[in-house]
Image (cartoon, helix red, strand yellow):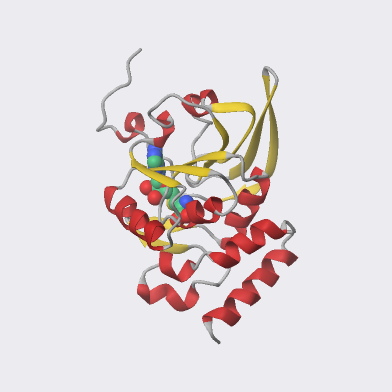
Length: 219
Ligand code: SAH
């Protein structure tokens, strides 16, 4: 079966799984997932499975990418922050649906490969950056949407601070080897509204504080 035929089959599977936002489906259709996986996994690029991308990290299952993207309820006016660039695939899907995407990755090699793929696709509205995303984007600013593609025990405080008015954040919450819950946090006035979206499994968010080799944050 050709990659094109496999892609159509995947889009049908996503519809069946409850992805009904046509803008999300067409963004997924437009991003060549085969560009984001190692050559030996190319023929599996449109299977509904997570795939390895090196450094012990994984490109999430298409259904999970679609579910998280749909839950963000993006418009072309939104600026989005992604923690965990990985292969760059999710960032490219977001780029088709929003005004600007800011994405942070802590592995230099993954970030360099992702940045090359993003520019090859001429997605000029994606800004990439090396660093610990649990501290938020280094320049203080607010984002309309935040998506975290690695799991933390609790939502990092700097990310909550960078979530703008009426902002939405989607993130997996929970430890490794334990159940992780995909959570949607919405800023409503002074408060935060929380909704659980289902069970997921992500690689861990590794922050400078818990990796044991970074400097401590002060102040
Ligand atoms: N969104 C990615 C999937 C990423 S897998 C894609 O579409 O391919 C999760 C990624 O989060 C890994 O690449 C991992 O290195 C990264 N990560 C983990 N902790 C991080 C942190 N504190 N800051 C930035 N990136 C982090």
